[in-house]
Image (cartoon, rainbow, N blue to C red):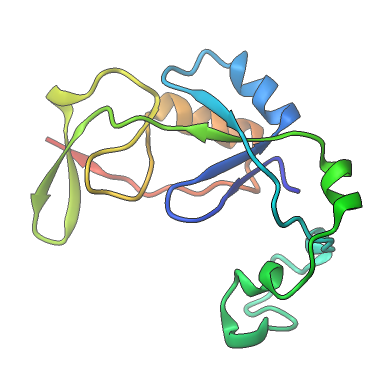
Length: 149
């Protein structure tokens, strides 16, 4: 498993080592919930060419989740992973509808470094959190700028 991954709408999953690192980061608004490992599959994802324009092989149906859903649960791989964690992200700022762009009401923000807004399935982070994540996980994160008003 990579040290941090994004699974499903807004879910952030981290390894035990990453959880410990984040806990000592000083980032505000971060809590954790242990993940129940119902389907862990053996995969050599780390050997894939990350610079390729397309995967070597697409999963059945072309959907990325089928890389996992098409394989059986591997209890040995699940044990080898050890505990994994989901970052619990609270709603900490209001979202303002303005055309097709997401904007946040800065006056409603509670100061959390990682947070959500009502009605939006994505996570928001501060510049402090962005810089910290880039420093520790440059190959595993990417961000888009969101306007605040």
